[in-house]
Length: 602
Ligand code: EUG
Image 1 (cartoon, rainbow, N blue to C red):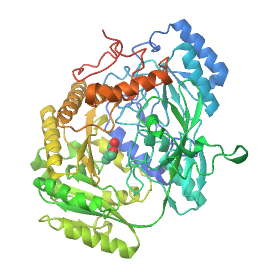
Image 2 (tube, rainbow, N blue to C red):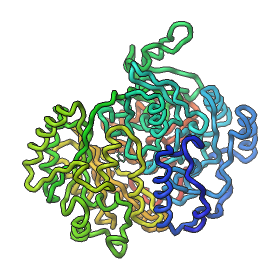
Image 3 (spheres, protein in one colour):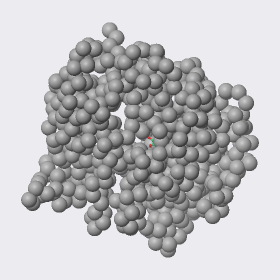
Image 4 (cartoon, rainbow, N blue to C red):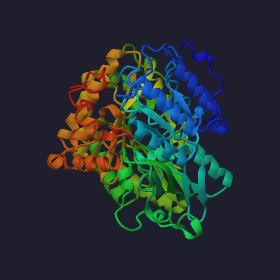
């Protein structure tokens, strides 16, 4: 943990837009100490290479370009990426590279970071990128962790860090139950602002609260209240197009009276004409600088757990969830986790349960789980119900009757479990209170980084079993513990596995890459595709959506080339390459397991 000792207090929201709320200061400090106690890597190392220039741009031209941008938006707002790279941790995270690097740390790096302070400065940055042919890569907060973090897909691209200076909650409308945010507003911040206003409104947060509300939504992330589909619950966007023009979507396309915003911008998502909001999600067609969201009126809520004794109960559990979810008896998108997660969510390390680097055996997991509050079981269902006390009670009766069909299932309320059990944090997440708890997963191995593998499967026992068995086998083959979290809706499952690896172990990183390549291909063979993926796997995943001679990607490329003829905006993001880069060897496909050189390869 060399070098980490020097860190000061964890920044709070008052001090930094990406900081923690005061209520979590102490916990953040403890989480950080735990994490770093399991680090052997130094905080940073001297750079091996000089500043990474954008592709095809000479040092001289880059210097000229940087000078010009500094002149336009202030010299302090353009920062060269020429200092040692610091991975940091969740709260004190880098905007220079992927903190959870799965290739060499210096591979996916920017040349510089720009901090625009307004929509106009975002427009100026985009026009500048066009003038100099420099690829730019916008981030909101840069905590898209497990999916690439703040790293640009093209080494040497200029990261546009929108959040540092654009982090205002622009509006909270108590009557319409909605808000408008800038890119740098985290779940932590939005939550605190609404508490300050004393409005009876909930936000919806993912498992960790440090992400950008806007960024997560345009990456189509999910949360766990009834408003958990973040993109579905957005309402209105303001977008800077790759040519610098400014666009508003939805009702925002119609001006309000006397130069005001349209009064229904945050009331009706679809408006008139083609619904174009979707093309700005998981794409590289524009930079979203403002976004509206619906907020949920607060309500009574009750979180709970069901456990199931046998691994083989899995199919039956999924088939029981389906009608409960379709009928909306289940209040939220529940999580179905394997009992191994009861071990790692405590913040303990693998070494606390197992010696050696092999995956834990089922017997070892059983032995360890037996000593935990939920005891020896296989699957753990985390659900939450909403409404009045009476309606929650009646919903729970129906749900108990359904899960009671599985022999040996058990039901727990938070009051049945110790104060430090994860269910208490789950209850916060499921009622819109952003927390930090899930970070404790990362103590599992030393210097832990993680990658999400996130396929979609039908909510049908048989299919769920097919995908699960395939993922189990692949993890076994490559020597990884499997941490499945299934977010089960009425018709589909987001099957999320968190592949945790040691950033100091090159072999383990290489195995994680091979594991990802194989599960992506094998799932696609069965028709199961990812809903989201790490930057370096985007080409492969995009390539699996190839029905009818890749009509979908050809459509995306057509849009890309019209909107961004110079190919400056986030080339390669979600597998969409502009003409300038396409087919020149930048794509990383299924057989690219050696990713030590990212760049044009012919
Ligand atoms: C999780 C869920 C996700 C995701 C990454 C992580 C949950 C981890 C449903 O989407 O993309 C516990």
